Amino acid sequence: MTMCSVMEQILDLARWAPSGDNTQPWRFEILGERHLVVQGFDTRDQVVYDLQGRASQLALGGLLETLEIAAQGRGWRCEIRRREDLPETQPTFDVKFSDTLAEPHPLEAVIRTRVTNRRAFSRRPLGLQERSALEASVGAGYRVVWLDGKVMLRHMARLLFANAGIRLTTPEAYEVHKVIIEWDSQFSQDRIPDQAVGLDPVALRLMRWAMQSWGRVDFLNRYLGGTLLPRLQLDVWPALNCAAHFVIVAEGLLQTVDDYVAGGRAMQRFWLTATHLGLQFQPEMTPLIFASYIYNNVAFSRTPRSLEQARRLTNALESLIGEEACRQAVYLGRVGFGSAPTARSLRLPLDRLILSVSTEP
Ligand SMILES: Cc1cc2nc3c(=O)[nH]c(=O)nc-3n(C[C@H](O)[C@H](O)[C@H](O)COP(=O)(O)O)c2cc1C
Image 1 (cartoon, rainbow, N blue to C red):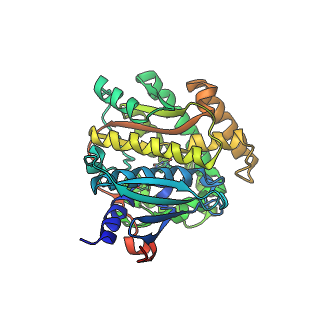
Image 2: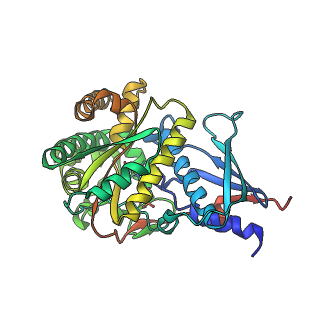
């Protein structure tokens, strides 16, 4: 086995890290036997959920965490440095590998099985063991706020219903949804297959028809209560059917690229730990994204109504978890017992992610 193929094995596992809408905002440059450059980018010019690049930076953190776990299994440790001379839109990292005697990481085994599940889970609550393993997984500098029990699940269902109202009636969000779904698919290398979205076949057909044009979406929304069916299936039902919703909260405000990358590492440790415990997982990031736009005065839509709705949503979230936790939140999602989804996003093949390989020592 050559040294280069060890690097490729590590990258082949690391590429299974999650990213918003499966955008995979990373490319790799192999500069030497033990020197890798991770070239990050963001989707702020196309994606209303990534206007400040934060979702992509979280994903990059998840990638680096996964890379480190995968490397450990090959007897390598990583030293990772972000290049500070580059603009925020290109978070770029030098990764230098050296030998370690550490045993393979216990989470390595679930890197490939970790998945987003947008369906209903069992309502069986988390046990003490699951709860404390998840709380420990995020590491120093983060804590986990749980939203569970019947009453809280109902509050979350209401909040996510309101949140979906924004997602489904904001024209800028339509532009995103239109391109991220791969239709008639169980798997997708670079998007989300329609079968993993969480709708039943009838609702899917309706959505596919509507999403041909904003005019159709708008017509459905205005006259036929078009958002009701997807909101019930995509938001309310899953929100009520899970063990708990959770928020990963940082010790302080997240301000820099590094803060978000570190937050993404905590997200991935939590997600992999959940998978290791046999739990299903779905991120519910858009309420946090809208809240961050409100806090940072980002006018994410040309529709004043959407901005007003986001303001009200932020107030509702603050009343559930407190203003401090809301401002310092890294990640929101839900977990629960259940079976793994049969449809899922795949990843771009490694040869499309590796831009160049240099054989210099
Ligand atoms: C920062 C971030 C935000 C995400 N937000 C959401 C979300 O709000 N809702 C959702 O269903 N999935 C969300 N996802 C999950 C991605 O869509 C998913 O990771 C990607 O499509 C790859 O699929 P996989 O996780 O099944 O491998 C998010 C993932 C990341 C990393």
